[in-house]
Image (cartoon, rainbow, N blue to C red):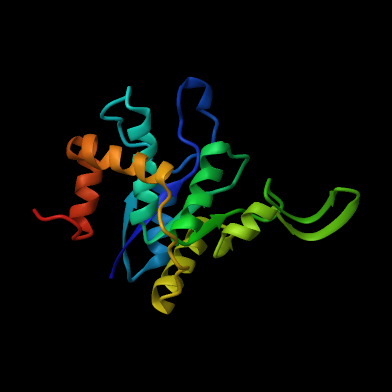
Length: 195
């Protein structure tokens, strides 16, 4: 079965981001191995931008990919920013399961943490705990969680899309998608558009 994954995580925006952990072919290969025998089509927010001036369309592209994905896999190996939190929240709202890669004793997960005047054992960041269907130690395990999710058919209920989100998705569909070669190819692989 073909499944799709939105690769949520930081993207390198310039030379200052050289040391940042980002999705690469290595992470995608590990997810694919873990998800076998399912074939994984990756939806990448770091594909080339077709219209850099259309910020609503750029946001719409990310949200469209979150909407059409079988699951969102979040790279939470290190501190992440606003965009990843929005992607997780929107995925939850749209009914797209969120799988989080957070290794033990990393930024969002700890065996023991002194937190808000207390000692917490088996700490998981509250936003990660509330929004994720599963937390994995690594990308291979995230692929295994994806396969299990597909095989059990467990998916949250989809809520109606609010105006602020549908405006962005519509902007992308109407004014950007036709020139977005990587996304068109992904949709073809998923049999979502002809030819």
